[in-house]
Image (cartoon, rainbow, N blue to C red; front, top):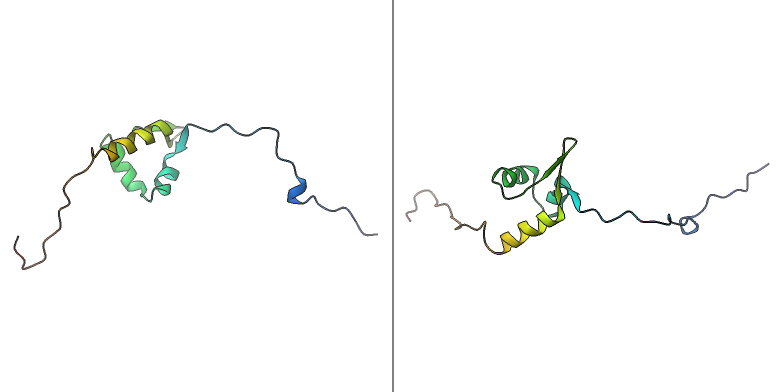
Length: 93
């Protein structure tokens, strides 16, 4: 005898009656990845005091308002410095 019970398709499954609230805290590594920066760069920014992070059970997080503050400071040129192009061997400045 064959079992004619068919599993529900994705469209048949109803989502839960609630959605998770939008969190104001983001994984620091995930944020760095989203802006194309490495964990080493994030560590340097934290060490310089450019970012304030949270440590929750040994994991590093950042608040969305801190991200916005950092982006505003960067846009204002607070972290800018003159780009120094290295000289080639045998070239004089």
